[in-house]
Image 1 (cartoon, rainbow, N blue to C red):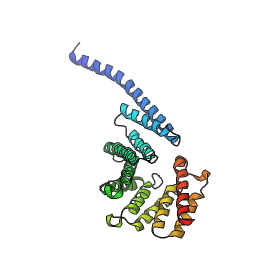
Image 2 (cartoon, rainbow, N blue to C red):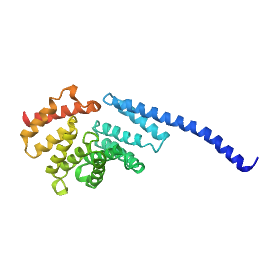
Image 3 (cartoon, helix red, strand yellow):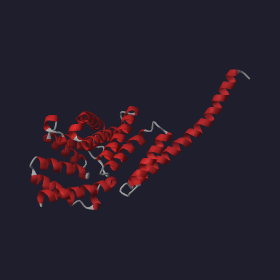
Length: 255
């Protein structure tokens, strides 16, 4: 038997083994992603978000280039980071989310969720660290959100406009803060995603900053009076929290 024929047969045998193995690997990854998604859907239950994180991390242990697992990890870390009290722990979680999404956009810079959760992670890390201590991150957060706007402005209920509006509100005026622009962006977010109560709450806070109390009061009352049946289905835990935050802001300013 010639050497060329031996090589050809070896390749065929390898391919015959590799294809089923790859198929099994893909199936395992899908199962892990599905398991992570189920846990994340139950994130309001103690320990479930951590379970989601574990499942997504297992995906990366099997498939280090899995983009979906990376942005879903950042989304999960965002939830975890917004539900811990420790500043150091918040920063650690958001910074880890940044790293996952940085790698994700290197693999696929057209991935809308990757860009969105990258921008969110930058913003939340900066918020946890302190605005003045993290001004260098602002351009990166803006850049990510501008990309989301260009690719899919409706993603996450106008999420890019929501984050940009928040950034312009929280930045000091001398560092690029602009409440007029903030209100413009947040009203755009409300128009795109009227059921996302965070859009409304952010808008109410800027209106209060600008002394537009009557308008802010109306917005807050709208949030508070939203019945469970009208809450954004995919984000019921977050929307319930938004209602509670709106109540606190209302009581502070109008009672």
